[in-house]
Image (tube, rainbow, N blue to C red; front, top):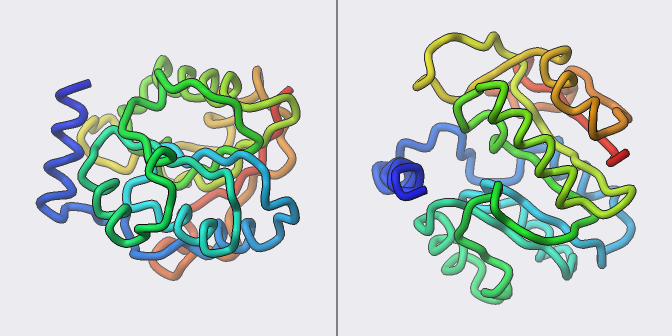
Length: 197
């Protein structure tokens, strides 16, 4: 974990964070806006600067937790949103995290780690384990070719490839090209809603 943690901490310190747009992107924001129950337990893995959590908090969602392997963006988040409960800001490894959630929000985390079959299977399995019965995995996946360059983040894929990992654990409600991506990401994102089987 130390090497991974150091890698991401350096990325944040060097401001090498091209994925960070400074606000919750439109597809995630629009999804949050249609949620009626503000008491659902939500996890945002690989949260980084956690703009989605800030938006949820400002909109009175009371049970949101964020987790990131690096403390650097989490400290920045705490300074930016000082009233957000500190105990719900977790530095740690998603793959070792324990909990029970109604919703996992995916925003650039899946595409951040090396795209081996083992890693992607582990993500699908862990999301399944963390969700309560009927819980949802919702978010964005990059719809770009997966190259063999293991250093070229973000890592992409195709609908069929992603579904091969999710199908054993989730029923697909929707998984299609995103119609409301922010301009820099137009045509490169898929929006998905998956329900735990």
